[in-house]
Length: 241
Image 1 (cartoon, helix red, strand yellow):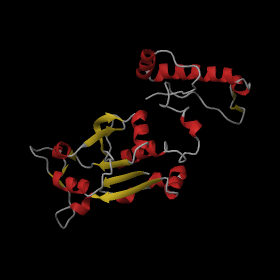
Image 2 (cartoon, rainbow, N blue to C red):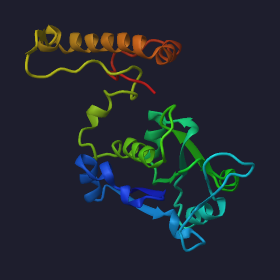
Image 3 (tube, one colour):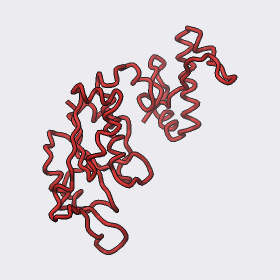
Image 4 (tube, rainbow, N blue to C red):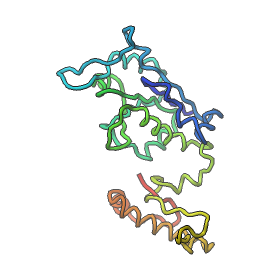
């Protein structure tokens, strides 16, 4: 079973959104597991502090290597990777989330303050992952995003395997536009082709829309699509990583 262990200064933030809707139902049904480790429990002082001023001077505080290492070492690995959520990490891609979802889980390290003593990374096997080119106050929100990206790919958690194959970053293009009732909204109607019942034409329309959106909004992804060659017409997968 996939199990996520979160190392954090704020365990009360969890499960948060991970405990609601289909993810929460899956958690309650034992389809995946979640636990937290309070990094402050490994502090060596009565105040529970885990940080010190940066060597060489500078603003803010840095999380101590000895305390973090003790917290990390307290968690059974069980072949799970340790992932630190960090803006300097490699961008999280759907392919990595899928890979993680098929494994035993992950251990997420949530940093705070100005950063983490580099010696933690030098002495522990830690994968640094970024969810975007921006900075958060801590790694908890990013850890939730990482866990959700993985857990929703676990069979039976989301409920519909077919929906996973047609969403963003699962295939080669960004997702095509979606429509539902009412048939007309503020003068805009659902495209006739979607109401035609002609599945071949619908698939062609969706693929064309996906191509146009990807080309306009994510030229970097479109370049990757072009390098890989034509998209197979028998697969209606509409986004890429």
